Length: 278
Image (cartoon, rainbow, N blue to C red):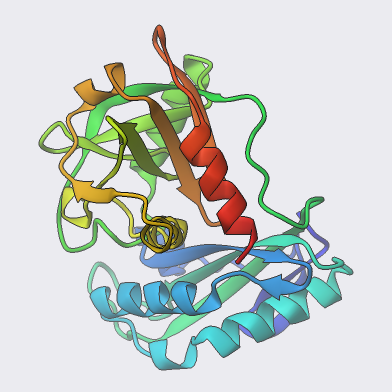
């Protein structure tokens, strides 16, 4: 963690005791967050992050989303990087929480925010040299509802999947939705290459509406790569040619193995090259 954080437009040391007992993010998971990446001093895809933030705040009936636009994201991340003497390459986490007191019913829908930063060594997205080992986590399915596509601070499902991942010495765990179909992974969206076509779970399957998911879908379309949003049976993992996962900080990471199944990485490699040209 860097030396400073930005909390409601004020810089504080990262270990400063700022959390109050009535904080709704702490008490109820009443908030959203965005993970973002800066490369060579430029925040990547700020418009897409702002759009997703607006959609999530609207869904949670939070006020003030029009103020948290792409200009706000670029300005605040730049200020925090400069304060922490980070020279161009960083990851950020912006947490938005409802600032009102109250029990389950909030007394106000105004918001506060916390921005954190940490330095990265690479100035570009790098495809992993060693492929990931994954398995399916099926102990707790992800429900499909109005909030499923939002990146909320209510993340117990991902915590439990992360514990499963650690226990079984995996690099990622793949989550299923309430109907038993592929949804996403512990920290990423999922793409499967099967019979020359790229498939990814549709938003109607309950996955988070990832920014990098959006970018990869656009890249596939621009380069005439067939990509289909679909309902995906996990059995396809036994037949697929490739599996890769995406998120805004790591970009594209290819999966090497699922059980005894082994995968290639040609499509992931090609898309990763295209990603770094943006």
